[in-house]
Length: 118
Length: 390
Image (cartoon, rainbow over all chains, first blue to last red; front, side, top):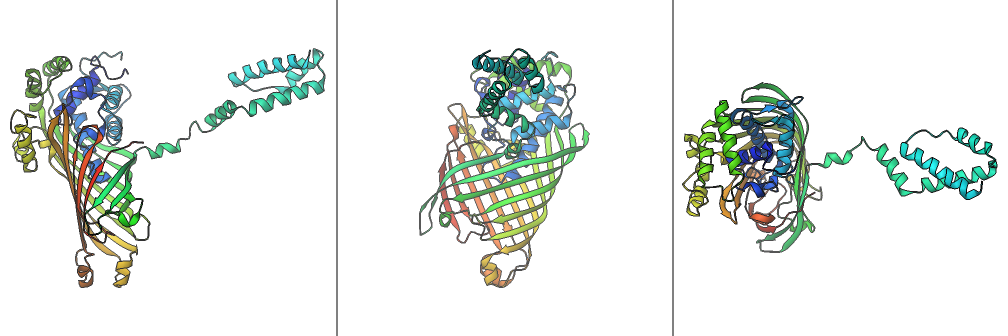
């Protein structure tokens, strides 16, 4: 997938979803570089176990929003389990960026109106 | 043929075979060359020189090593490890500065989903985690407590969103295509339009995580150690729809909602239902393998301990179009039914409160008060830091 790109539905929907869930207030242009530790769920004063619970909650909710509110479906060969596990692995890696998250979402989800040929 | 020509011929021939990564039939090659009039001794010397130069070439060695270890990625286990440099300023009577670092590690070894229906999902997982603070001079470490754990989890998530129709999905896409062009998103008519549609399809999500956990607690020099075995329950409630009654009752976010309104980060007083604190509560059996204080009191037997953690984070204000976050956590340990000696020594109960203000560009201000197991004194610690990443 291309890097952070306003013509890529996975990038734009990842961005609006994170804004919708109060995880960031960045505009699209600069959001791609934002790391996971700079999202609202990442509490650096908490233990890793507590933070992982928060990341798991968010990973399930991102999947809920993609499927239910944005009418995305899973790409051929992927499952809900794989998609959510990969989202979680990005979320708990403080150095990963929103662009990295969008890339994994692009891999697992066929977003509404997205070209099947991506 | 001269020696140089033999060497060049062999070099080209062997190089082409090296790049093609095919088997080298030495006997066949020797037969070909000797049939063209090359003496066997000269051929053996040339081959010996060629092999030695190839084997001593770093690129050849690198390629071989790469092939051998291509499927082996032991370093992948370290994914999830982060280390942060820190300075600690203690305000105890012996006030001193301490330089050190904190580390944390979190990794799921396996995860399986058992139930998947709508927004309800449950599953099991196996995880490893570790965290702690290390000061380069141990005596100055205000939070000298390292923790490492392995756990089996059962988790379940339900709620969070409602299904939209195709027309609504198309509308959200159309608004989104315009939103990405804006520099000032918050407060724009477009963003308000997007929220009006999307938020109405968000509901409250509940996430629970029940785990069986075993681990090791120690100070940084491992002169004090506890082995632990117990159960923990994690609970996370998120009222994602800010218009819901539950979101409006998130009193933890009230002070920050006021600040966001007064600083025009939000257009109205809006407590975030997404910032409800997350809770972790557990009960463990503790085996104090090395605990001089307990040993001195003759209290070396295993004992039960309740532990509780609460974490909270929310957006405070907007600074240069970036969020400033307020974070806080409360950690509490209690040994119920402790003996009078343990209580009088202050070993039955520990509480630690952490709070931090995280500014853009990795700068943070933090304040910690309280003590953890293995801390002798109740410290108040200010720290200022920046973060590096692996």
